[in-house]
Image (cartoon, rainbow, N blue to C red):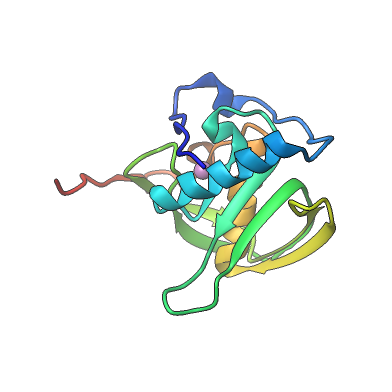
Length: 161
Ligand code: NI
């Protein structure tokens, strides 16, 4: 496994559409392992393959709460089937270090995808999971949270040294 370089805002790959994965081969498995490691290294809730420079439809999400059961998702070719309700949430993105803003996301979302073994899965996400799924799937469409935020809610946090 390896930490991959995270592409940041301004890199045009972030605004491109990712392609469907046709074969889940060794290379894809390595990419997934690297995405998980990279996401964890930078304490991200989610990561999409374009953020590490690969225009493929793969996302990883980890919404495990401390002390709770592990809740990690690896989704290939995810598709939003349904959304319900809305929530206003605070959001950031690993491609926008130290920037946070308020954004409207669905309260619930139903996604179908393949898991890393090629099995069809259906995820019903609520609250944080709904937010993360919507955010990461947006990345696969070249859409960034910054373009959808509620005006004047952007905060730039200066990290402590
Ligand atoms: Ni992001």
